[in-house]
Length: 281
Image 1 (cartoon, rainbow, N blue to C red):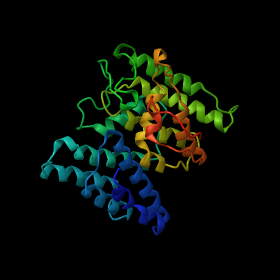
Image 2: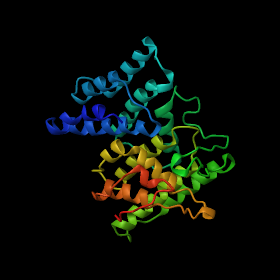
Image 3: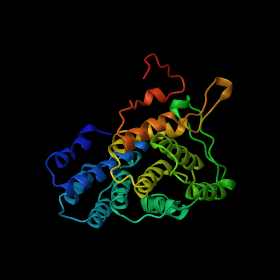
């Protein structure tokens, strides 16, 4: 994500009122998550977001202005998917501003529908076909995602198991490890054709709040969203013939920084299956 774009919100952290700083954090996260798919929002979205942060317009006004903007402006290069970046950023900001949340598959589907309605024809719908995705950190190989036939049952099972899980006997590190296991398993199902990581990230933030993590350091999602996605990839890929084992350690690094304020180094190149660590952490 462009440093210029992300730095445009820094003034609200340094000089803004508490309410402005909170809104700025939400917008920074919403925009930063677009990096997962290599998307960059427009200058118009940034300016409109600032008006929301300053209290001049509501989040609903932001959405309406973005919708009207694309009704009257032709996108020069559709491949940049700027319209998607703008609209999804605004919708993420809206969801993260809300206090409402239910831990359920329906909520997960609802988040996807709200983020991608009118952008994806399958918004909020479970995919009915199998998928593969080439990953650069896997030398072009793909994670084995859930088959179309098993998605519904797998999704419901994972939610039911997590809903019954008790955290009261775990220490902080064990909590992090369990959350890493749950969220990586949820992502591996890949229930949507597109938009899985952004949906999972938004759902995770909301779920963490429900668990009591009110002061989640969402800057991690803003600044390291691509690392977050790659850590999910590594948590769900193995090739024993090449000595490659699935590992949640990178996701645990991310979550430890996010929830415990640790300072683990988050470098994407270290997630590559051929990376050789010459310097111990």
